[in-house]
Amino acid sequence: MPNGLAGCCKTTALDITALLNGSKCSFTTCKFRLFAIARLALSSLATFFNSLPDTRLSMRFSAMPCHPAPFLDKMRGTMKQAQTKRIVLGITGGIAAYKAAELARLLIKQGIEVQVAMTEAATHFITPATMQALTGNPVLVNQWQDDKGMAHIQTSRVADAIVIAPATADFIAKLAHGLANDLLSSLCLARDCPLLVAPAMNKQMWANAATQRNVQRLADDGVVVLGPASGAQACGEEGMGRMLEAEELARDVFAALQNPTLTLLRQTQDRPSLSRLRERELNGVKVLITAGPTYEAIDAVRGITNRSSGKMGYAIALAAVEMGAEVLLVSGPTALAKPQGAQVVNVTSAAEMFEAVKQQVANADMFIGVAAVADYRVARPSEQKIKKSDAALTLELIPNPDILAYVASLPKPPFCVGFAAESEKLREHAAAKRKKKNIPLLAANLAQNAIGSDDNELVLFDAAGEHVLPRADKLVLARALLRHAAVLYKKGSK
Ligand code: CTP
Image (cartoon, rainbow, N blue to C red; front, side, top):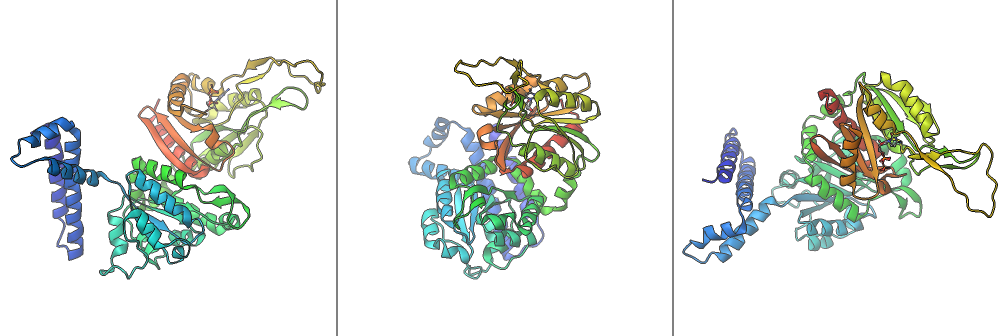
């Protein structure tokens, strides 16, 4: 028996034994077990057959007495099915429900099977007939429509994730409080898979302390919050609360389904207290952070700076405080409020930032360079305002010190985390930057996605490879980044 087949048969046999060894089961649980066994067997077969080159597969079956082609086609189709990702797309009653149709279409295009479940309110914005036609599956609306009355359990058992898009403020509140008074909320409460929500609401509803509390609670419970974005709203106002576009959501959902950390969320839901424990993972650790842009003077009134808002660095400072760290934030000029619980040193230029870091670094256990430090400064800034003339003006720029590289090269450096802001070739540049600066962990982002925005997406690079943190609010990302950093820090990674 080839090794691949032996390996997959072994796993299947063990798992099937485990499934069959359960105590006496009711008709319903038996049915789920049999379904699980069938899925497991098919996916093991699929793993094995897919590892064979096509020619080998055809040769094996060409010896069969009957015509093999239809059988082979069927076999390949069944194996493909076993590997298909399935999501439940939950639609709640907001105007952004129209985007759910496009989202379903894009997910299906990416090979994901979509089962739609809608609240009654959602049916006023988009019809179940539209969603049924797009997905090819009957839409679940009413918890009493299933003749066995078990749709809320059954549906999530066969799903790899539930995605609520749009998620209204009301539905988020229900999720945060564990209410289950309709099919979709029951389905979410009874789930055995990760949950992703894409909030969509008016900006005041989003900013309301109650909504923010509820969203925070969802994040604490391991729910992935996608967006919202800022922009024009259906009510005519402009601000934060608009649902992400279908393309962005489809990309995020797809990335999340490929991301192994999503499986961890399933465990977090089983033990909700785990996330609380995690938030103290930096107890007593002294964390030094740089954030914001720097400003390099040209003359008394003009200077060179960049579009960094400082939001990511400030979010990291806040998340580090939450996780029990003692935080010192060296900040370039920003319009942001001081993160509660952190000590802040305000600086203007890269040289000032460098001085502040040099003074504090001996006390730091961890250094996180988030600042968008200007790489050059004006060689001879003028003390007075330079007067305009018709002649061309040439400024001589000289390089600034690289603060992160300096800290990383100290004889006893703190655990260093760098950022990479790239405008293209993210992975290539980021991996090279991590090596060049000799740091254990680097978080890379596309500058055009990150600058000024409230949300972002990161790719973390460490000695083990890369880890995608899908698009989320910067505070949510900051927590995920720090959890990752805390693990490496404790391991003493280089
Ligand atoms: N950094 C720093 N001091 C500098 C420049 C950058 O500490 N003078 C830090 C940043 O805070 C970030 C990392 O180095 O953690 C990478 O910054 P980035 O601007 O992405 O890259 P650079 O090193 O400046 O290289 P390039 O501009 O060529 O991409």
